[in-house]
Figure 1 (cartoon, rainbow, N blue to C red):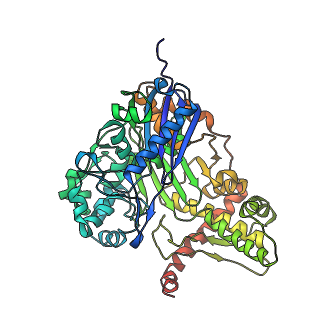
Figure 2 (figure 1 turned 45 degrees about the vertical axis):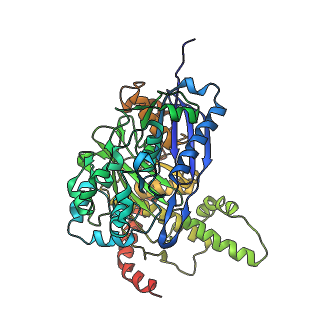
Figure 3 (figure 1 turned 30 degrees about the vertical axis):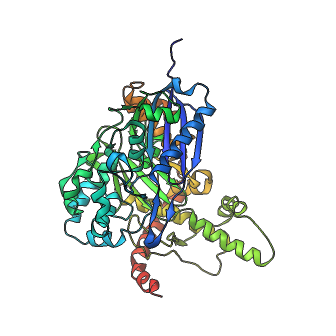
Amino acid sequence: MAETRDLIIGIDAGTSVMKAIAFTLSGTQIASASVRNTYATGEGGAVTQSLSRTFSDCVAALKGLGERVEGLGPRVAAIAVTAQGDGTWLVGRNDAPVADAWLWLDARAAPTVERLAALPTDRARFEATGTGLNTCQQGTQMAHMEAHAPDLLDRAEVALHCKDWLYLKLTGVRATDPSEVSFTFGNFRSRAYDDDVLDALGLTHRRRLLPEVIDGTQVQHPLSPEAAAATGLLAGTPVCLGYVDMVMTALGAGIRSGRENAACSAIGSTGVHLRAKPVDDVVLNAERTGYVITLPIPGIVAQVQTNMGATINLDWLLDVARDLMTDFGLDVALPALIARVDGWFAASRPGAIVYHPYISEAGERGPFVDARARAGFSGLSSRHRFPDLVRAVVEGLGMATRDCYAAMGEMPASLRVSGGAARSAALRGTIAAAVGAPVSVSSREEAGAAGASMMAAVGIGAYATMDACIADWVTPHLGRPEAPDAAAAERLLALYTAYRDIRRAVAPTWDILSAR
């Protein structure tokens, strides 16, 4: 009987969970398996992950998927892999790990970031990458290693990212993809390494550590016999190296559909705001913040801004309420309070309280960077009650979203929302009004694995173009657009002016407060 290769496996290696998802060639998810993975914290802000354990987790997830899909191996037309971005995964002789990976959470490079950002060469680096310096990036981490632990780089033969490491273990090929290159060591216009960027980071002499760049929609490599034996899949199965998880998730969630570019906001504990646009339309801000990351569509990139604290602001306010109730002997779980947010919002009167949602202890990172930034209410009076504070926090999240999109240019014409905001009518409506664009929610599960699998579907010829793939994999999963309320949009636009002006005026006080 002839083999029927009717499935694609998408691997999504997150920071704490490894997932393997089976999709049909037309984009229907049929099964999934996941494994909890771990990372370690250490002195000086170190956050590391074992390379060997990460691949073992990948193998376990693939085996778990095999237990859920009968006859999986012969049915797999391709395997695609995406993973957490940034970080530094050093590999040496015989493809052995040099040390545990420095994750994107690792903060040890903070003094190096401050030093490099002050150099006159950083503007040229930013113009090439479109990406602000921060501690999570491989470039700044390697620059910090160069200054403080050069032996790590001396023993390395290649510097990879998480998905690149998994690709190496699956295929035996050392490579990375255009998305990681574009915002780390390269130029988002050329999708290639850039000499000015390497010079600005002080890493020109380490260029030998940079791997080959391949695009998974054009180049795949076969699953090695060793990886096949470990996973139970068939040797020779094409493996696609996906782009970084941030843009794979956006692609799967609808950052582009109907051959048109859109915006995508994932608003959970943090906020991630992406906008697909032609390369020539990218707007780079004076503050040198955000990312520009290539998409697997010719001439199209995702411009990104991320804010440090999103729904954790609501969690904080509700925890304050819980503490008060506990004092009176009432034990109310946080999820029960979260379920009441929409009700409190509806019970409040639209007013003129402005809340800046900088509740994270790490301050803010988008559209400005200030580790000392702190949250605050402005415009309170004696008539305001708890529901008014809930409304102010929700509207603060909407205005923080607008603030991030404003740093990228004009407001988007349409917006896809996922994360905590997708479940709350109050949050969805507020974000729509704050941005002035209709909001849609995707029903697509596991959007990151789906995005990588879409690349594999194009790569093996199941679709001629990514837009053709999007028509089947993405567009049918988009919910009905929810148009912004005109009155709410007008009010929030006026409040945004106050939001922006207060933020700029109060910033000098953060230095004073942080010293206390």
